Image (tube, rainbow, N blue to C red; front, side, top):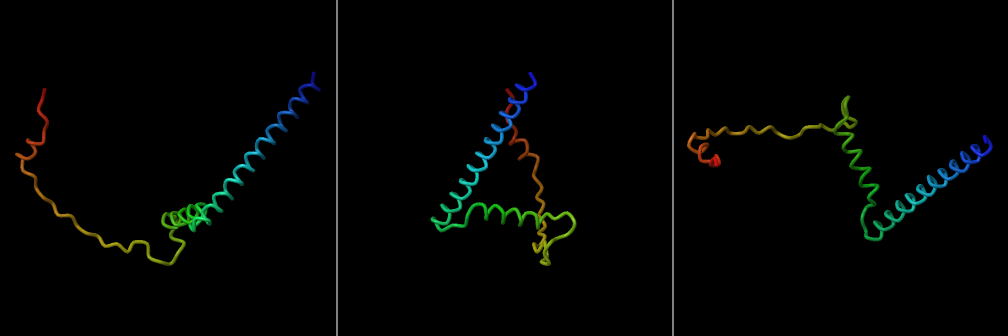
Length: 98
């Protein structure tokens, strides 16, 4: 009985290994095809674009300071003007009750 259990374990282990390796080959083929297709169209490969965006995001949101020497916030602060809304306008915006 243990011999049959050992054969099943071996069989399913090999089956899982074949599945994982097959999926790895499919993903590698898709990656290479996508890169070649991008180069044929004259664009940067998507993998490079995504990696570059990830690095930019990581630089901008570094928890313990920045990784670059450039200043982070160059934008100026603009105050917003406050405008008082009369009560009549507020009452007109309400929907009628049914």
